[in-house]
Image (cartoon, rainbow, N blue to C red; front, side, top):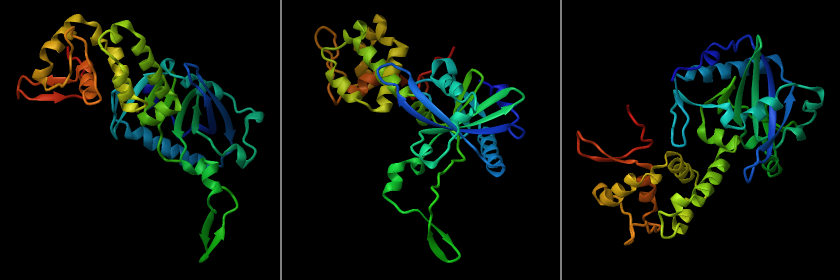
Length: 307
């Protein structure tokens, strides 16, 4: 898909800059997370450095692909998803107005920031560049060390805390779109991993899915809290091949021909074990494919239907 013109044409160089620091809480059991934001004063030199970093990150993006559970981007691409599908609107709303009572007043308010937002505004258009914080923002890291700096051949005590602002951007928010550079950090900030766990619980409760197995416990244990496996089982839910009786009949008949180790009982139910769960997931994703040209069998990262 093309790069959104409102993103490509946003005037970063002439935009005004506000930096917002966010702490996140809640967001379990299906509830939306709470984003508490405070803005912090910055000088002109830092504003210019931030605009340069955001501009460089935008210039890096040469193509945009649709976000999916298993989609991956590379160093020259971004993934796209609508803000309405995420909690990004809560960030935009929290950073709407730099009111005096929301201004950072001391270093304690900075420590333990979960992520920060570089907000750029130009002629009524707004671009948010979001980045998850590193260890320099955590108070527990500071309690176990002595901050120092080197000046004039002498190592001295640093009394003012230092925080690192990366030149990288995890994702951009503009209008109703999110452009994702770092999928793991995007999912972490906006609790997409939690959504995956909840979706897997919903999948387990679905009669059409649970009816496939003699016992789902080995599969549940295999997936656990592993973010890759959670994405995969959520993609199984999304694709819904298991609801197609024809698909399942062909899987029972053809799995051995595709080098899939899956145990079926006499009634055709899957009997999962720790050793076979990986192949079960691959099969239900429809990710074991055969080439008519080379006659080789492949696993694919994301089986996209070609019209």
